[in-house]
Figure (cartoon, rainbow, N blue to C red):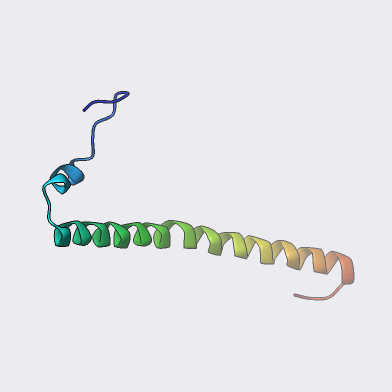
Length: 69
């Protein structure tokens, strides 16, 4: 079915006729893929933000108190 110019996900075409074990395997695989995507996108972003935060905090400390970082 073509809804709003988008097509259905072909990965889910066989789920209507799949058995319980096949559906569980599909969702476990999908969950692993989603967690992997989060690890490779969100964690590096958070690490960079932490480094920027530490650098900005260090500069504020140097200006305010005259201490090193």
